[in-house]
Length: 379
Image 1: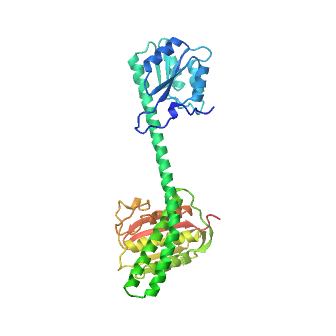
Image 2: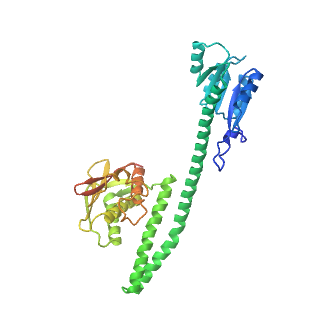
Image 3: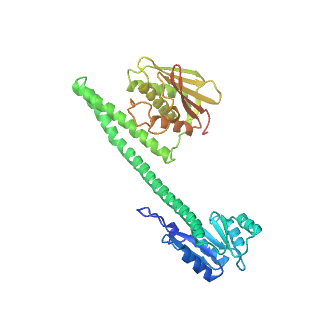
């Protein structure tokens, strides 16, 4: 039987964050004891469930989630110990705290059996009202806090899902008008020549390209966060990928100085478009945070038979406290960054998707980003 939708313990937290109503189970074969215990433990935020036998208690546990179970030890047919063992054997009730109540004289053997059955406490009648209320209130409040935390986590997950969906929709829909703006600006700039209007259109085109890169990063970020990133595996040459990325960088930054070196066999199986983006992001980061006097150096190493390695080095140093967090989203080592702080995060995620690893460290010659990916994963 499924839990009842009317179960108070399953009700969502109210807007004023008042403690949710929870269920408390009392099991005793003597009706007077049930009435007395109910009167003793009654609270506005507690719904008390009463059972006169172990079988009746099991039926209630199938319908309701409970914060705590108070079980009388001595009951006909099914005593409290047997009921506790059945509760511990069920996935639904195995974690319900149990307090045993007994009118028998104190017996260490029986107490040990109670704790062995999974009890959190073993109390002897007559029970001090202050003691039982204090113990019960602790478990009720712990359960309420757990319900509130679960409800807040659910609300947070729903909000995050909504935000990611919104980002995906917006970025996808923005790409078309951005492409139109870029094409129109490029066409008008060619007609306007090198005059003031041409320079203005050049700035417009550069800004449109920059915005297009941001939109692309947001779209990749959304895919990664939503776990829908798919790679298109094909045979490729990492040296050609590096040359493509360097060419694109020089077109966007004509003044940039980049030195590319390759060594060994650079053939492998990977998503070539994603790897171009990995190199483009690393090079763009190196140009932004490097110096004009020192070139960015790119080295592609294919001497290892199983692994391809890429190194991108630029002058300068990254503060030591930032190094462990540099691949996190929306992080940037310098305020000079003109992006969203997603470039290195995307690098790390794309490399991980290829079964590889990205790392960064300070060296005497500057900051070194390294990428290592297997040659044949995804075949």
